[in-house]
Image (cartoon, rainbow, N blue to C red; front, side, top):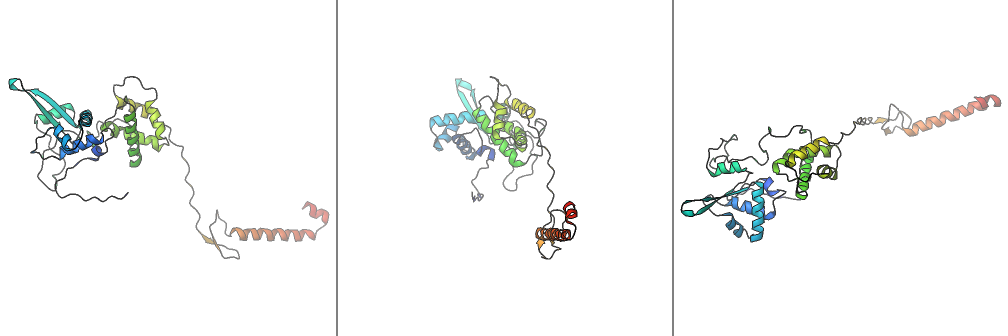
Length: 292
């Protein structure tokens, strides 16, 4: 697969790969979210207008909106104002926000000063409330016993398996943070020789009807049912360097141990020795030669 990508000089929106590849957001939900994020700050349009502009039908829009709410990318409040009227406030975010964080953004509470350097181009902006999609709440909330020696490709594959389990089993609904925290454990299973089927069975066999914390249950099962590490095997000895045969052929061969002649020359020497022994035995007494 060839890819040709040129970064636009203007009129672009930065969207994380987590949104584009989100396992539980449909194509309409992703399109709706990106469309709304791409609008200028001066445009005060509700989400439904973005859905119409994006060509999303009413039924598909309802499902997409429900998905964005469930994953924490969209929040909505309906507040009563003076005169018995109601006002709807909507918030769309490029990062996952809890209800408390979303209220903080809505009410304009002071934000935490950014720890990263100022961007190289453009005016500096305040940091949004929420967590970065690829580093959710840092390292302090990660569950214990997270393996750090698992190769990145196995961690990525483990995350994909977890996402597929979450998609098929409604009792194990993982969010993006759960998958990121459990992916290393799933990768450790793969490193020890387990298959995707082994992982799915370990997570889904004998599930209770009601699960209060799917991530905690999955972490417990992945840790408790971890397969044994493969037995250590001694490394294969390095092959001997090539050497020139000490016999009459002057060929180059690779010895197995410390032999100095090639296989053909050793075989010729053995045949010559055998013939010499036979010729010596013919000069002896027949009875003595029989027992020598």
